[in-house]
Length: 325
Image (cartoon, rainbow, N blue to C red; front, side):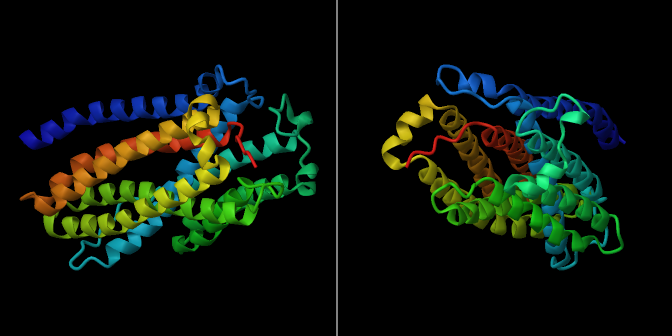
């Protein structure tokens, strides 16, 4: 009875904490462009805060759905795993991703300006540009993913979600860029690994909370941790390579403080380093603690920090890129 009462008391506190974190996460992309651009002499695009928020929501929805698919498959391979699984959030996440992609498509349809009304949106014009076609692909892919997630075969949503990630990778590197396919390839790997890492951790923690069995739960957390170590290495490697392509080595130090893109990138690097430290702490507890599931505490902190990283990533996509060739 005492433990149940403690859980009930912690419920409202946990809900408030989540709401606060969501508010903080939303404020980063929405309010971030102005302080990031301050003193740099760069001009931000109109509505950059709204665009950053929409792209943050898109990234979060993508991570949640991809991570859920990944860990569900991982859980099935755990010996003695209970048949129970957390309720799927993919249908809702893909629906939210559809709304975010639709909002971004509306921005593209008005010439990358914030539409003042429906009359400003040229839907037909989307078919006439590369960015427009990619925006439409993301809208349709999220819609298809939502329908697949709600169907009798939710695993089929992996294909439209893959289409979203390919479209995002291509969008981030226009054809005018030097070696755009190389940049798109790096971005695609970065996005896939980051989505598996963040979304997978969320679903893993949800599964552990449902199972409440040390043996199967510890085994699942251990399997996720081994894959996450590889994902972290891939995210780091692709992030460094992508940054050096946009900021050549001889200009990095200056651009990290003198450009909006560099400042936000530096913040992302610091946050990612903190996430990596929390991940290491969780892995040490998992391997050495008498109760391996005590690793859930630093893992939850890692998840919250990853949420902030996603918000910063959304902000990064809305800032002018300091390409110097």
